[in-house]
Amino acid sequence: MDLRYRKTIIAGNWKMNLNAEEAKRFITELKPLAARAKWCDIVLCVPFLQIPAAVKAAKGTKIAIGAQNCHYEPSGAYTGEISCGMLAEAGVKYVIVGHSERRRDWGDTDKLVNQKVLAALQAGLRPIVCVGETLEMRDNGVTLDVVRMQVKTALRGVMLEQLRRVTLAYEPIWAIGTGYTATPQQANEVGACIREVLRQNYGARAARGVSILYGGSMNTGNAYQLLAQPDVDGGLIGGASLRTESFGKIIEAAEQHE
Ligand code: PGA
Image (tube, rainbow, N blue to C red; front, side, top):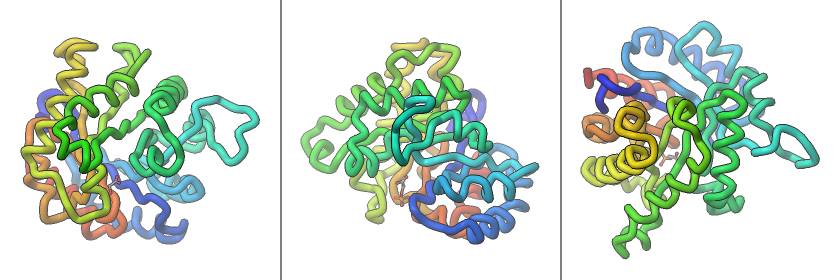
């Protein structure tokens, strides 16, 4: 992280976990810590149905509520889908786009991810755009090529003035939910590569201002080291975001880097 230029963001991705009651309790427990956090933006990406309870519980705190997916059209015949405008209306500030579980199970291609990013920005949301390689890609030495292409495609048509609202998340697929974490060096190498793509497309100044998160088995034991890297500006945290204790400790680890 480099606090001179960009925000540190600690974002929880609850996936399909926690009911409304648990969401409320989680936020109530996290409030005192959130109030003390000086450097971090804290985000909780909750299941759609938990959004109203979470937004209500987080009102007046530093905790922002995010969604985990969106549709790219503002409205229409898309059974079972939720538009970015609906999310914004519900008080959502961030939306995860292109998570590898959606790419794998729901056909979120780079093109679709791009459409969702544009729709999120259009609705005033802050997309958290996920990119990352499979183990096979890493073994074949194509990680940086794959990530470069994912970032370029995801951001096609995003204007310079919109880039401020974009967050990237490097999430190596082999590290998600597996207990395997990228080393701080690996996370930083890919983070730096993402920033280089941003620099080429938007210039150095804009690229410096974008927060690039790491995700993939980030936990209380490895967060401090990962966050010490210059191109790791926060975390997108799955498993360890389900309990206030572990999520809180990761926030504390981030706060130690001043
Ligand atoms: P994990 O999930 O922390 O459980 O590996 C991260 C993510 O999928 O965003």
